[in-house]
Every structure is written in structure tokens, then in C-alpha cells.
Image (cartoon, rainbow, N blue to C red; front, side):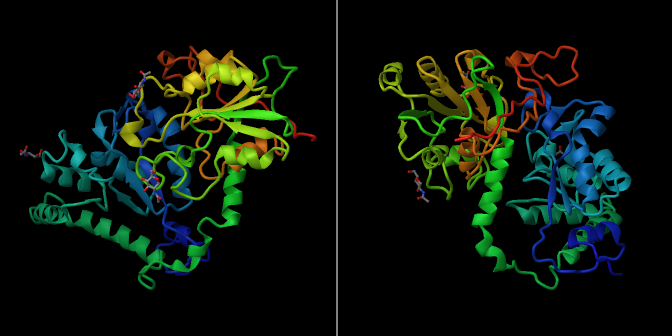
Length: 429
Ligand SMILES: *[C@@H]1O[C@H](CO)[C@@H](O)[C@H](O)[C@H]1NC(C)=O
Ligand SMILES: *[C@@H]1O[C@H](CO)[C@@H](O)[C@H](O)[C@H]1NC(C)=O
Ligand SMILES: *[C@@H]1O[C@H](CO)[C@@H](O)[C@H](O)[C@H]1NC(C)=O
């Protein structure tokens, strides 16, 4: 059977997989199925308590979209749904994902995910294998002791605790993805695109994404005195903050290393400080002081300051926080600088953080999220070469005791509501 759609779509709509080798396609994975963003207190790997309506209308739509587009694999979440570990959740993995949604790729487990079906992890590995495979996991991520997994799985199949039909289904799904990827024709990775990594064209696209994702939350202490776009030409300006000159902080967790890094030697890119220096008028004197004292700020005759602070990189459990504060010296830098001169604060963080106590003292407030390597996108918009157009994709809380708080809740009293974002006109300089 021949299908002249793209390779990723093929196995979704064609009964017989065909191999059409598209060297510029990859097998994508949608994860973590399902509800991992809704756990109690936002704690990693925790339990999500949700009605059927919430599961299908809040947590599932991204999977509907990925499956329609032919995603090859779906990863089970470490988290539980209404008390059932997702790695052992047959109702969701098999009955809903495979049978109802007709997902035809394979379900893959997370790193030692089946071990964590029991508490403590690996307490009953035979049970973990039986429960996960019978729930619908097709490929198992076993980072270390794979002979133990193979032996126990074989025993379970020989004892008929796991039906051979389940193994056949898993193998069929894995082979279908491999055939449609062309792995039987070209099993080794193709290096012909290696020179595209980090190329100018891709960096330009990333920079555009930075420009479009910035959200302007406040602009001027009164609406008729906006601070941004900032003037490029000024005698002397101050750049401050832990996140002004730190590519690792801009990139966040899961960059180069699991928990991310600090500093500028981990990858090529442009820090926000470097971008500001490249954007202002050559006559503008840019002074960088990471955490200046109020006396320093007052005494230097700065026209204005850009303060760039935020969270430090994290991934998974290391990102759990019940206070969602910006770590020191971030708040001190805001207070010291914004208490002394006109300032724009740029927050670099993966999520809304506590900002309410400082908003009054801040003249203009921008959230840059995690802009990644292309910090030039921040300066493009701050200095008016492009407009601010981004809007909040999350509600921004006043204090953490309001959480969870979502648009539509009876008591919705955010600092900035879902969808908020001020716009600017391009600068006329
Ligand atoms: C492991 O789980 C199985 C199935 O629930 C149970 O029959 C068995 O007793 C458990 N083994 C241990 C050592 O707890
Ligand atoms: C980057 O800097 C850190 C800290 O100074 C150092 O430990 C690390 O080896 C450096 N990495 C590279 C690739 O130079
Ligand atoms: C906020 O929570 C984080 C993570 O638990 C912790 O490391 C930090 O010390 C807390 N900060 C404050 C101000 O309590």
C-alpha cells in the first residue's frame, strides 16, 4: 500500500506500513501521559485528582492533537491519576489511548517508571512488569539491569500471567514505527544534517520565538508615561541582576545537563547583557553590576536600569516549590535598583513567580520565560525594534496561598489574568 503523505502520518492512516525514508523527520514522543501538569500542589510524580470531564477537556487535548498528527510514541507519566499509577493504568493506556483514540504507535515507560509503580521503587519488580505490560506499556526503559527485566518478563509470559497477544501487540507497534522510520533500510543515524545544528537560520527562528513570547505586564508608573520601548541613546545605563549575563540560566533545566547549568561556557549563544550592548547606540555607556548597592545606583547618573533576575535552572523534583519565590539576591537587586532609579525588570523563569511585593516599585515589568540561547530577541523588543505582543498562557497569582487558581474559578483574583499582555508600538528612533 502506498501513501503519499509524510512519513510520520503513514502508520496512522495506512494499514500496511510502508517505508518512505524522510531523512528530515524524527519519531516524536508525546508525554507524560496523562495529567502530569495537574498533580496535587504541583509536586513532581504526585497524584492528579480530576473528574473525567477535567481529564478529557484539560489534560487530554494535547494528546488528541499529537495523535491526529501521527506522533510515534507516547510516554507514560510517573504520576498517578486518581490514585492509579499511570504506568499501570490500563483504562487510560489501552482502553482510551489505544482503543478509543486509535493510537497506533507505541507506549514507552519513563526511566525506571515501572519500578516506581510500587513504593519503595523496585519493591516488587515482577508485579511492576506484569502490571505495566498488561496495562499497555509496549517498550520499557530499563537503564541498568536489563537481564533481570528480560528474565522476569519471560517467566511471566511462560506462566501466562502476560498473554502472548500482549507481546505481539507491543512488537507489532514497535516494528511499525521502525519500518515507517526507514530504520530497516538505514539503521544508523544520518549525519548529513549535522552542519545545521546551531546554524544562523535556526538561531533567527529561535530569536523570533523569544520576541513573540515576551509578555509586558506593566509599562510605566502611569499609563501616559510608558518606559518601554527604551531609548537606545542615553549617556549611561545600568544592567543588573543574576540573570543578565548567564546563558545557563536563560536555558534552564534539561540543557546540556539534566539540571541545567550556570554560566556562559556551556553552549554558544547571546546573553541578554550582550544583546543590550549590541542594540544600544554606540555612544551609550552600558554598566553591568550584578547586585549593586543603592548608593552605587544613585551616584552614577544612570538614565535608567534593566534588572534581569529569575529562577535558577531545575528539572523534575528539583523544581518543586511551595513558595515560588525568586531566590536571593534577585529580590534585593530589584529593591536596590528600582528604589533608586527608573527600572525595567525582566523575569527569567519557567513559570509565574512571586512578584507582587515588588510591582509597585518597578516601572516596567517583562516576563521572558526561558528564552534559551538567543537573548538578542529580548533586546529586539525592549528597545523597540519589534513590538511586545505576547500574552500570558497562565494566570499570574498574587500569593501562593491562592493556588491553584485558574480562569473560570469562583474566586479569581490574579495579579495578572490569563491572556494578559500589554502591547507597544515600534520605536521611531
Ligand atoms: C508481588 O506482587 C504480587 C501481585 O500483587 C503478589 O502476589 C506478591 O506476593 C508480591 N510479592 C512480594 C514479595 O511482595
Ligand atoms: C565551564 O566552566 C565551569 C566552571 O568554571 C567548568 O567547571 C567547566 O569545566 C567549563 N566547561 C567547559 C566546557 O569549558
Ligand atoms: C522556597 O522553596 C525552595 C524549594 O523548596 C527552597 O529551596 C527555598 O529555600 C524556599 N525559599 C524560601 C524563601 O523559603
